Length: 366
Image 1 (cartoon, rainbow, N blue to C red):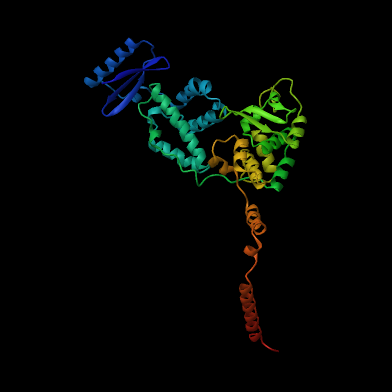
Image 2 (cartoon, one colour; image 1 turned 135 degrees about the horizontal axis):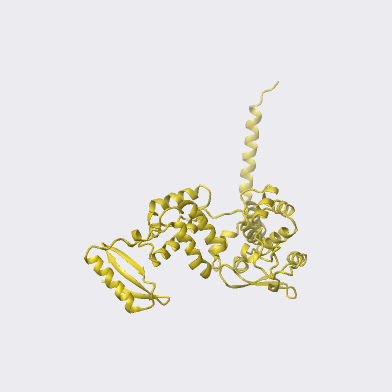
């Protein structure tokens, strides 16, 4: 037996056929009408006149993707422009001309393998999650009966966490390769650890020069965050010309938040820096804090993270820092723990004498 249920004021059907579960949108707010549609489906099943819903709805992936952006992503997700739209553009290049019900597990595995040739496992995971959400919505909108992505597991990301950050020489070269406004953008990023979208949407009203702090709402988590300003940040912000057309600090000529995407890539290439993306400036910020002996809890709060596990991804100390840390043990230990025992010293001297005698005996005389 099937059933009728509501979601967002509209009625949906739930029923089974040949061991498969089906969810169907009725498009009505009238419960009696929805029940009549359910009875019709049950009659079709009994009389063997029911055909798979997904084969009755012939819609191309690219057409569904456009509908998904308009009906779901834009109204409900603040990240749609920078995330969903980019993912969907890639999906369209691969699946665009396929009918939605033709996309199966094999197609998706092939896509993931193709993407792994050029991006990280974590990026493929994010794209897969986006596709899973899209196809779940396709089921809800009566375009599909089953989501093939639900059978796919994410790649393990433990072995693909990036440890890239800029050393002082690289950072200096990068800043020298930037034009003034981009240089200010990069400087604020490396002194705050802010994500690129938080910087892009940073407004002048978020800056408190009296108390030397930046207060903003994170685009990703929608949480309010305070970051103290140091002298470099203060001087950098004061050097930026305010736009009369826009409340944003880093505004384009049209008053919209600047992206700096191509400008940053060009500066990176001019600086001769390889394998580096803008988000790695966040890694750089956290790594330098850790090298300055800042505790993990403080780093976590400055990054706006909720767990130490995520902070550890950003706090990479290089080998020199580790050697320095171990070297500090000598100064911290009591003298009797760092002095070489007298009998051990005598044994080492004897071994040195024996080695010298062997060397002399094996030397040819002229």
